[in-house]
Length: 77
Length: 382
Image (cartoon, rainbow over all chains, first blue to last red; front, side, top):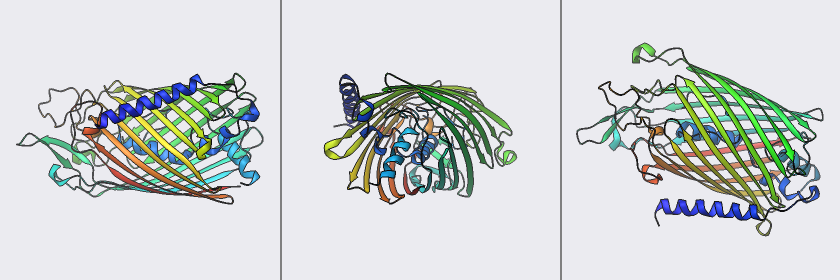
C-alpha cells in the first residue's frame, strides 16, 4: 500500500470515528463527567510540550496555527 | 490515587481553554504547578551528495522551559512561561542548478551560534459560565525581537455541554540581521501580525469530547528570510487553519485516544494537512506510556524555486526547503511516572521528512530536514 493510500485511510478512519461519536451525542449530567476531567482527556495534556512542539514544527514547516490566537514570532521562520 | 491529586487533575482540566468547564463549572486552579522541561534535538546532516559548499552539519538545539501555574484568590489564575534556547550549526544558504541539472545546496558555515529567550505571562478570570484571559509575551534574539499580546474569552451553554471560545492577538517583530554589510543583508526591518480564532467544544458523551476551530492570521512587513540569498517574498501573508481535536477514553483499556487534524491554507499558495494521533495508556496508578504518530504534508509556495534564478526577472523567489512540496512522518514515545507530588517524564521523537511523503507532486528541495528529539520533564504540584 502506498503512503498516500495509508494516509487517506487514516483520515477516513478519523473522520468516520468522529462522525460516529457525534451521532452518539448524549446528555451528560455534571456528576457523570469524572472521566472527562482526567488529565489524559485534556485537549492539551502537556502545555509545555505543546509549546515546544509548536515551536519546532513552526521552524521546520510552512504551516502554523491552531485553536488559540498566535503568539509572537521568532527568527526561526 | 491521592485525593488532592484528583483535585489537581480537575483543576488542570479546568485551566485549559476550550475544555475548561466542560467537565464541570469553571473554577480557578486550587493548586500551583511548577514545571520544567529540558529538550535537545539534532538535525540530521545534509547528505554530502547534495552539498555544493559549506558545512553539512545542521543545527543542534537545546531548549530549557519553565512554567508556573498558580491560583490568585478564588477566581483568578496566573501562568508564567519562560524558555531559553541555544542553537549551533549550519543551515541552507541557497541552491543553484548544477551541470547535471540537479540542485546543489550551498550551506552556511558551521560557526552559527544563537540564543533565544522568551517570557510569556497570562492571567485568567473564571466566571460563573465562562472565563476571560489576557496574555503578554516577549522574545529576544541577538537579531530578532518580538512583543505580542492578546486576549480571549469563552462561554458555556447547553448545561455546560458546549463551549464557545474566541480570541485576538497582535505581535510586532523587529529584524536586524547580523553582518548586513558583509552579506548585503537588510537592516532594521519590521513585521506585524494580527490573529483571531474561534472554536466550539462539545461533550459528546461520558467518555468523549470534540473541539473544532478556525484561526486566521494576517502578517505584513518583511516576510523574507534575510539569511538566504536573493530570498524575496510578498510583504503580506494571510494564513487560515481549521483544527479539529477529538478525545476518547477507552474504559476497557484504561487509556485515552487523542486525534487531531489541521487543514492549513495561506496566500503564498501553500496547503497542508496534519494528522496527530496519541495513545495515553495508563499502567497501574502511577505510570503512563504515550506512543504517538504524526503525519504532515504540504504543497509548495507559488514562488518556491528549487534553484535560484539570477536574471532578476522574478518578483518573488525562494529556495527555502520549508516552502517546497514535501511530507513528514514522526513517531514519538513518552513515559510519565508520578511520585507523590512530582511527575517525571521522558520523551523521544524521530521526525523524518521526504518529498515522496507529500500528498501532491511539486517542486522539491533536497535540503529537507529530519531530526531526533529527546526531552526530560519534571512537574511539582503544591
